[in-house]
Amino acid sequence: MQNRLKDKDTDNPDVWKAVGHLQKAIAAGGVDPRLLALVHLRASQINGCSACVHAAAAAARKAGETDERLHTVAAWREAPFFTGAERAALALAEAATRLQDGAEGVTDEIWEEAGAHFTERQIGSLNLEIALTNFFNRINRTIKEPAGRTWG
Image (cartoon, rainbow, N blue to C red; front, side, top):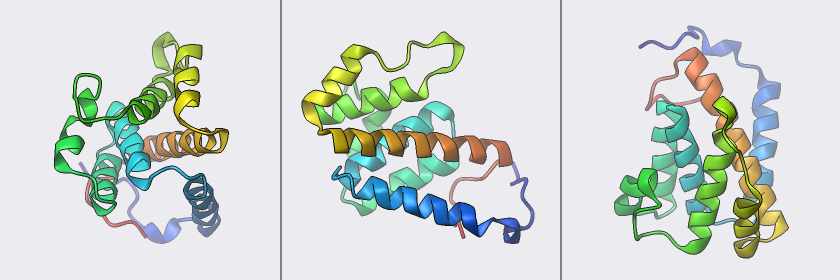
């Protein structure tokens, strides 16, 4: 599979500036970077975005995440390695990502569980991370961005 964008010089710097602002807002939300990376990883797994799966795993490792947890995030419900807060964030990520085919989306139960573990500001950060991940997943799937390619 080859990337459909032949000339990376066609990137719009205004887009990257806006993405940078979103990333700063996410980081300012007070959510552990390891958890943000796990949320990014789970949404990217659902969407089948190899570039973001690769990038999320690398970011998680850089933030101190273990291989044991990275290898089981796709099956987090059955794995004993995740806290209640992490489970709430992963459930939110899945529900917000799986909107296709009439999926239920974020239920009151999922929202309330997230609220039991996170402040409103942190939930805002998680929601923005999920949305930005889905944004990148869709672009990468459209242009066939390969895993492991360096952006920029």
